[in-house]
Length: 147
Image (cartoon, rainbow, N blue to C red; front, top):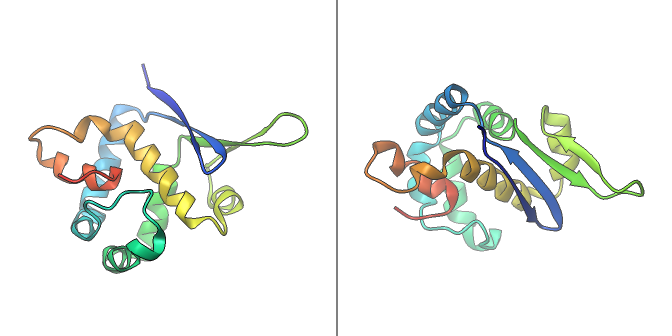
């Protein structure tokens, strides 16, 4: 059964449903290949750290990423994540199935986007955050933990 978790982040409630095993495995392999080399610059940085403080490390980490590949990875990471936007009817659910929905929620809120990406990764890959597996070296920095 797929795990489902919700978390309030910056005033909104986000929900992530865990990926099926084969999709999650493929995504983890892409993350390790695309993001792995950049993680050294971000290891030990908490997702709650002020962007001004983490700016140099973030700049170094993102410099090695292809912008198009980074955007595709965000779409894949948030594929099974949604948010409830409060409105007069009790709330409107937005599923992050395409870039326009991500833009709608996160434009002007880039730090929140990073927090939600971290949450989605934690729901899907927290079991790699400990242990001696080689993949365990890649995931903890993505989750805001040091190895």
